Image 1: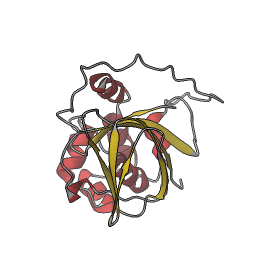
Image 2 (image 1 turned 120 degrees about the vertical axis):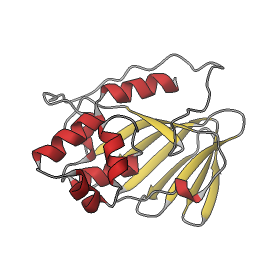
Image 3 (image 1 turned 90 degrees about the horizontal axis):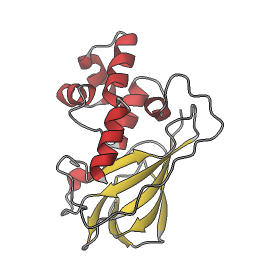
Length: 197
């Protein structure tokens, strides 16, 4: 499942879209690094598809390039009024933590074929790992998480909450937040992200 999600994200060519938009705006990697507060090496790795950026990082890039986050998940000719995303087969016991889920999760856009969305929905799988503060992110907007499987340890500023299937949380994402999967089964959730464009 995780490898399928990674492959689908690679097929979206996020890095190519970042590079193309940056070059279109006549910005160097250094200039984009200064605008976003991200490191030049990280931006280079994203542009070369060596790193799948966490959503918070992609939001910083979108803001720096003056586009909505939806820009990275749509195709040029997308003009649909609705998007149907078919479900995937149930996950079996082959699930394992991803080697490159450095941000603690991997995500799959659930409505990639639509322009100018007000919200961006994702299917998110969280890595089983010990919490550390490097997993905190913050960005403009609000988020909603609905837990599907497993147990999720949700860190929000100084609070820690354990969420189980059926639990949900809605929060101001400008506060530092992060998550890790705990227990035997990897946690999965539907996440909905709202940002002002």
